[in-house]
Length: 600
Image (cartoon, rainbow, N blue to C red; front, top):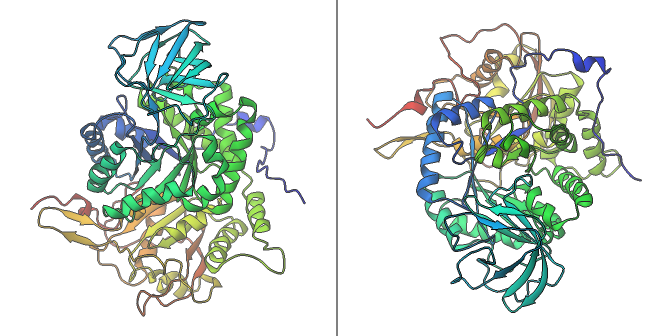
């Protein structure tokens, strides 16, 4: 039987749309990524982007040197420290992308109807009649008369006059004679070439990518690698092997689907990757315009069912040069949220756009409006139906059962917040999979601290309810234990476990904080401080209902041999003793001194 996957709950009336929005302290549940570049790399701008809602920073190695990106990342770290806001870092690879070589200093002018030759001869200078490309040979690519080719500046928007559409007339060896379909001036930091329906057999990681990962990525403990032009699951295996070889076992892989081969193998890619990026710019060149929405909806749904975070590109291109999006763009952003996107990734808007900070504010505002109309209950039921939970033989593991129970309980009691305790971040991902209506405050904690909330004053006082107790089996038993801990190499202090907290910034609705191992907390105080923090920043008020969740864990120690639990509590007026200062979102519960320790 066909299932309706429209998760839209319309407003009560058209007049309600005209009502003034409430000033909500909680940020948008949908995550917002920014491509950092010339217009978004100073400390001041990065601070503004973080305050506006940026949660993921993308460093695209399709252009720029490692030194350039390092300076940007250093500025981001200063901005994070100044604003007390976490941000996930992402290294975007160049992959088998094709670029124009040997460009002159002056722009290249092209006229509609003229002939232009693409050649694999790298010794030829680029001009108005010939463009040398970085691909080794056209043999076996499938290029033939009638094929469509796009040449445009890096992070093209489609609206500028710096891109050209070509139609292949003849293929002669490693040269393709084309006709220009429009007039343009080719300019920009880099010119990329996209050949529709091409079989690109180049290595998934370019030599420059290998260097970037092993040097820049390893030195900076990057959180995610975004794998450009992912074609199949084997490509993901290649990058994982490289990450493991240079000590980046904790770094996760985001598969970027942007060509037909990746679309064909999307099922295997979603299963193999940690997260997915739908690159609509490049994929839109390969697909007919009228079919793009079909690919988008199918891919978003596949990621939602698998519980893999999915982001989407190319949303408000107009804001690269204008202070407002078009009505169609604003509607597109909202529909992405309603379709199940976990995040939006901005490209040219923040890379070279004139209104980077305004763009982030605008997109976050649209996402928040769409989230108010997202039918969380219908979405939850659709996942339950998919896993057969309404049948005699449900296909739902213990971890999924705990996570879904937490979300269901939050909906039943209209909870203002879900608090999740996690060691590796997997619990947070599973809860986020069910897209609850309320935020998910995720406490990244050590093994010996993770059970603290089971002995806190809320349950002892009788106001807590032990809703679900799963059997043995580990939420994160198969993963290495990552404890927030302080270590020193004699030069600087390092807070371990921060990687897991930053990686959680990719999960819809998740606001990660860390339990400070340098701050003496009695049993149960971690939950006390988490609630006090939530009250401080306006997530909850006295009398609000809160759901607390921890999935089952085994294998760490006697302390960790425990069943999972979902607990319901009511926020009271209890005040944590001592002068505590919180900033939102916070790195650490408790003292902030550990993050500010410098060389002695």
